[in-house]
Amino acid sequence: MAAVIAMLEELRDIAPLTAEGAAARFAAQEWTPGGRPRDGVEASWDKDGVGGWIQTFGGGVVCVSFYVWIRDVDESGYFDDLDAVYEQGSRRWPAFCPRSRNPLSPASSSRPSRRRRTVTSSSQ
Image 1 (tube, rainbow, N blue to C red):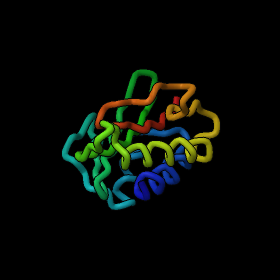
Image 2 (image 1 turned 60 degrees about the horizontal axis):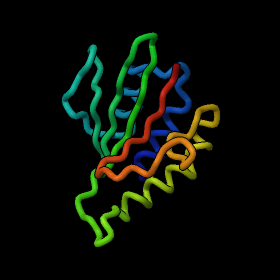
Image 3 (image 1 turned 135 degrees about the vertical axis):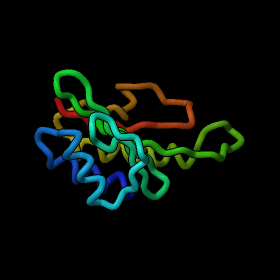
Image 4 (image 1 turned 90 degrees about the vertical axis):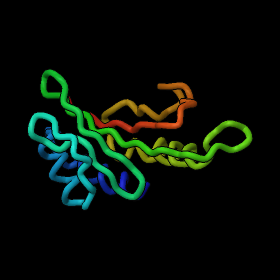
């Protein structure tokens, strides 16, 4: 989670958010490129068991997503470690992106039950 927090701090200072700018910040924070360039920009990044992905959409919208894979399942079927990361991200989201809807809040989405959770930051 520390790697994601550090990247969110870096990305919130980019206005407007561009794929090139995001890729430069990933490289500066010593994330490992995943070898998936898109439109001349490295789109996939890894650090400390966390993945990052840069996507570009029409109209210049750029989204940066982070994901964590958890392999162990407890007896209840939930992913305790992942839930802890999800809750921490939900609490910290407003500080990083105060003008955007918190995609992690209970009001904006139901609790995902998949093994992959994605936190997305975007600029329009």
